[in-house]
Image 1 (cartoon, rainbow, N blue to C red):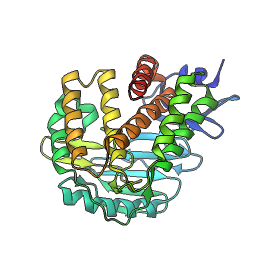
Image 2 (cartoon, rainbow, N blue to C red; image 1 turned 90 degrees about the vertical axis):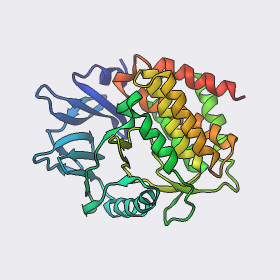
Image 3 (cartoon, helix red, strand yellow; image 1 turned 120 degrees about the horizontal axis):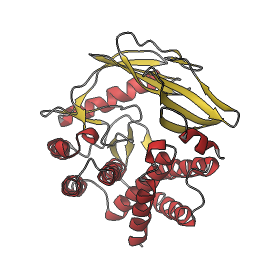
Image 4 (cartoon, helix red, strand yellow; image 1 turned 30 degrees about the vertical axis):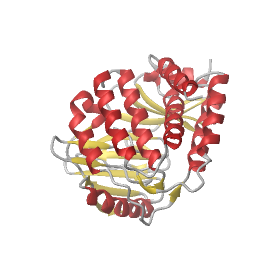
Length: 326
């Protein structure tokens, strides 16, 4: 029996990620508490609630621990504030949030303020609303607000993220899935990764704009009036296609999983296409980044126990879409 098979059978398992020594797991225990641990060939070692071998004791107080990735990060949500605990890099995250936040505010989007930070923890104001991913068909006005606000901002003090960077990320996820045997051997996937990677690195003379660099419908909060964007940790200067096509791939996945109807998906894609038409990009770059996002989602969700019922269908969608572009 493989390690990923063992992980999928863990009682209360919620999420899983590749880790150096095995597979990091997040579960809800019998008392309803979020716990993190590490699964290896020797077994599963779970940390105590709100404790971590790298992050240390995680102060929860009156809040709720909503994310705990073993030895990497944890998130505590309270009524007015959100605190993120990380291994290192708090200063860089605070700086990125400030720089990108100023840009997004100039577009008319809401951004959480960093109220306190250290090298290993940051506290933000809590934004109102629910994510566009959770809202599904009820979030179309939020998508419209995003399309109207989005601008090609070309000048900001953020690090670059190139097509080569994106190709390396895709290759790393593919390798992690191979090592953990989460999807088995499929030459179609290997061929698709190689092809998309080759297209990604053909980014000579591409224009870079302010980018979230991990933008998906879970990062966009809509309260019926205003749209907020969260998690600006990795904001970069990148091709417009990076954020646009990651958003589209996630919307396609939400349609496949059910929360987003076919009509709503068409509306969302229409909004994304409208933004793309105003951006310094090309159809070829958009297609390359869209395929990269679709493939990456295969690998990311191959570690998630809850994906087993639909992952095969998503793989077929991603690979058939890849074939149709050639």
